[in-house]
Length: 106
Image 1 (spheres, one colour):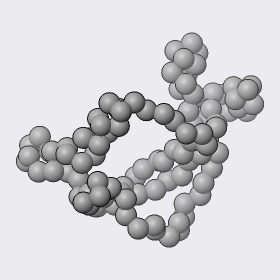
Image 2 (tube, one colour):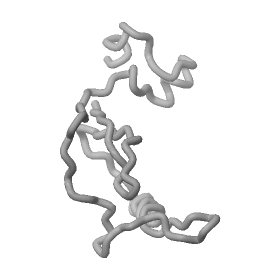
Image 3 (tube, helix red, strand yellow):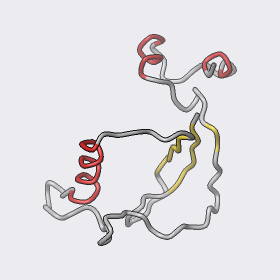
């Protein structure tokens, strides 16, 4: 299972345009995947201006202080929010039909 909530970008302009997903079990990644993610987060440059796009700190973190939740509601994601690539390829659908969540989530 995983959960979701609407939030903001972690860096300026901190626009509220992000849909976060949080897994209830850890997901592993290889050292190469971790290095790729760090490279993208911390050293990405705008191809037109050559300016770095991250304002990360010296600890290589894009975290900012916790913000008041305001309107954010945490919800348990279902197949209405996401289905796997395998299910999408087999069914040709992007989400499960409304009212059939229990069958898809088994």
